[in-house]
Image 1: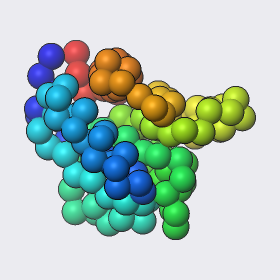
Image 2 (image 1 turned 180 degrees about the horizontal axis):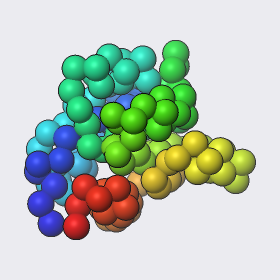
Image 3 (image 1 turned 180 degrees about the vertical axis):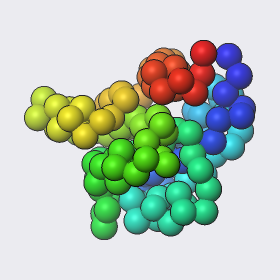
Image 4 (image 1 turned 135 degrees about the vertical axis):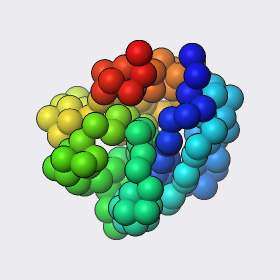
Length: 131
């Protein structure tokens, strides 16, 4: 499966985790990767480039991953973007909140390359980005 043509935005406030997720994404075949530290930086990046996939942590102040998800889903020009929450937040209430907001999938940290690849491919297929 060729993921090299998919544009990816990683939103993660912890530098070590951001680097780890980026490394895993490179391992599984992504080539077009942008990383930012929070949802506010993600909004700026999305104004410059179109992304087909966003991997976002829940807690990325001043704009959370959930708030970013709501922004993406409310914008018709961005709504086709696949969105996977990658977070340590695993309470049932938070997962349901993300699902109601339109998340494509949910991945709890710590994560493996196989888990990330599975969730990402599923989200990209769901959005019609991959076949």
